[in-house]
Image (cartoon, rainbow, N blue to C red; front, side, top):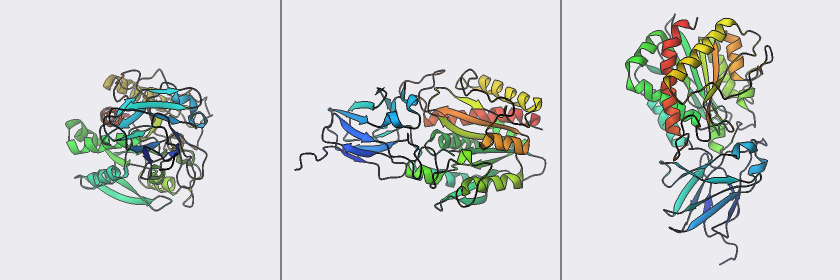
Length: 382
């Protein structure tokens, strides 16, 4: 046996996987590094499986390059997501010293997975697409292709009826923000349940849904970019079929069908709260849009304790918006209510949940709360 042969097998050779094993010779000090996105220096997302653990023994893991990640301050107050079975996820106490991220477990089974956040795996993504395809009243009206040829279906709940408001929801432009597709699963669940509030919404509006804008990046375990190293949420002014076909496809169909309300679901690495960013810096920003934003946020605060308006991004000064962002570009182009919804990677400090912290299930519940607010707001959109 080689002296340096790892005693614990570390693997990330699967969809959404990302880690490099540096030294596995000491099970109490397994040293790892996160790999950057393809064609990009961004890195923060990790997901790996450790096998060969000794039940009852403490095993320690060190991500050595956490301090060089895209958002190093985000590790403060962060706890690693873990799962023995890949289904039930919980958080592991984690320490960050400014350079390395450290966590350990006393093994309850021989194998365990760790991730930056509860991952939305490819098999579940395909299953969600099939659930959407099988929903009465929901049509796949188009299907784009990612840079590497993965499908990006566009679903519509409705028949394209004239006079109905067009509500667009997209998710996971940044592929490491897996809470965004969990959010979209909540949208599909709401359509499946046929609750009276959803029926009322669909009498007034049609939902246009993109479940995952960046399937290539998600597959490869990227944090922020597509297969060409492009940040899709910085491509809404100059998207091209050659480098950002994902955005190009959605923009074309927005132009075809129109937009009356736009929600872009994301996750924020640093801020432990749910919040929205909007279009106050757009050159076309008006009191009408400001009133709609206020009504939306106030109603969502009333609907769920998981939303708040105190913590978030600094508001853009008038005329100073970054027009490459989806929210700003769509809001300006269609003179509509457009918002970026941000969910945390950490626990949600307004309503903490110590075991799982912010999770996939909470992201899905937020989607249904948000849609209830949209149902009440639709008559005011125009």
